[in-house]
Image 1 (cartoon, rainbow, N blue to C red):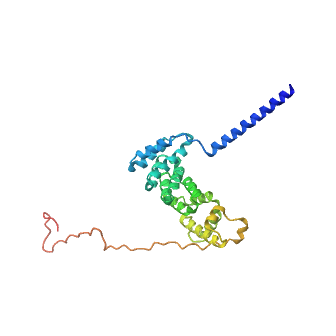
Image 2: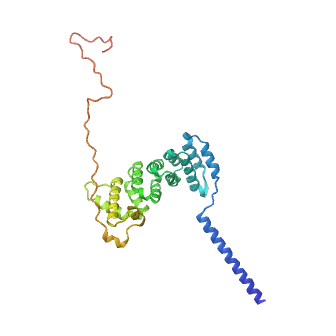
Length: 283
């Protein structure tokens, strides 16, 4: 009986091991390639049936209908498909979707930017203007996936959501940790100017100049600094931050009263020889 018991136990142990490995493999596979639970072909057909003028509204309506755990994935698929059908309408599509479904603003902005990276600035402004409460999330995902365009993205978000400059500067540093050092250096340099207030265009213009100058000194590329950052051993080689870029001043243009789109017609004064005849129209 003892040999039989040992054999049975051995088989049970092996069986449990096989089941455990299978469960682990299944869970890993589902984590990397999640099953799609929505009918992608049907969604594409609905988008194709919409006229170009109605495509943004139809896209937004389909995203509203997306529910459950795959909502983000479905929204990204719908927007990406719509942008492929009409690339020129990418910002309008994003704006329409974000207005009705602000919770997926970051996801759909990235889906559109992935299809049309040349329209990145317009897409960022469209998403954040339509869903200002999601601006920092939109900023973060776009900066992470399009790090070389951080200055364009930050400036676009700042234009569509005024008054958030400080939060935007901080959010870019969180999204791209390799820039934190340069952001700190730039803010400290700009703070020496009179009447300094944190401005996204000024800060990131200074950051870009600092990154480019550092890349030349370290004999590398700015993209390498963005992706890998600065090694501890390179800190002693860092050049001093560049001087602030001169502020752009708007030239004063005096008002020219002689130029009028509709010249004012002045009526003749009262004639010297008698009063005006009010029953007749004035000249």
